[in-house]
Length: 120
Image (tube, rainbow, N blue to C red; front, side, top):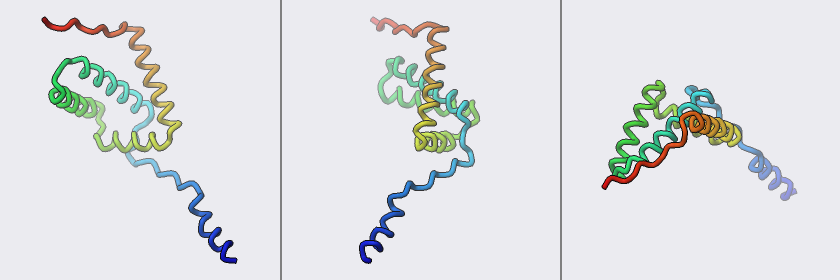
């Protein structure tokens, strides 16, 4: 009898927790794809800028803020949306699949970015 009571208490812990509700300001997948594509391009530009780490971080943060402002998205809405899609791994995989496709299309259209020779 004690075993059954213990088992009855343990069963709910084994169940999958309820899915979190999407945030009220959840960004649509298409918008997430555009933003993530732009963010990855921004990261590449900053990495290739040859700035000191502090300057590169300041540039990235300023450009990231501007990118979100132009898209009319708050940083918190972007973070909540990203977290929501990340909890749903399949959704984030699909979003990043579209990001990769977009970046590949841009590379085919504009060609690969070549590294600039170092200044002498």
